[in-house]
Image (cartoon, rainbow, N blue to C red; front, side):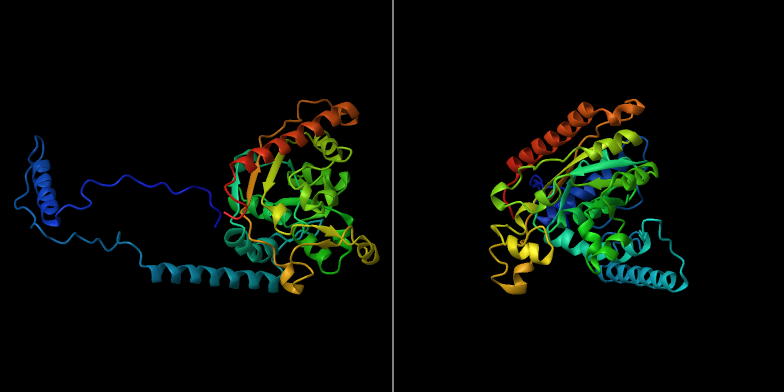
Length: 348
């Protein structure tokens, strides 16, 4: 599970090495004194020194085996209910192809061990995402393979009190890939274009954009945590037109999962990809080189930047769009530097 808090060593108790008989005597004496105080009637007889504590069956601690059994029963019941809905068609798919039932019960569940056990993602500032209404999340992009987008999606679903879905704007390439495009639609992703973004935002959805695009996710390891250009600020225009807050998000840990040390550009052009990465493990180790390094992640949701106070024509003001884009970029970059200074290790 993600490390959301640090363990704190408690103070040593003074009775840690005390004689058990003396502790029992003192406890019995305190018990009698309590009832002998004014306003309390003393009990008819004192409890024996070494009497076993009473065990109320209704309040007794739950056995580990019973707790585990209950968890499995609940999961089994949930799985059966999910299968029933799939067979009977009692689930909804929205106009973008988003299948919330499949996403929450299967797809996110498949990613959860990677999120909790492997990357041990820590989340902060999740309260900055509103519980209802539209919001635009803007994050840095890195890692050679865009795993950071999926981890951010799971962070919002698992940690936000309203369990909000993150609707990501993805590059055209994603939807041309076999199987991947269909899966992306079912997970709630759509094309990175302003019309789709604005429809989702007006519909009260939380939308995510990664303005660096392939320049960010495919940058060399030597440029890690240095934000690339944010484009022309189309995401700011979408936020201004819909009046939703912009939430800068900084992700630490993704840069090191696949350290890109070279790029076979001729091969990338041949197969229609923006880059073909060479890492210390791929293709040297073959399929094993596809296993990401187990880095420690931190996803920080920053304070919202309000856009509702601007007039209707603000989205067409290039200087305002540029200023807001630059403000978002600087906020993410400054937060990345701060988190890196606080980080103890890439892996811990």
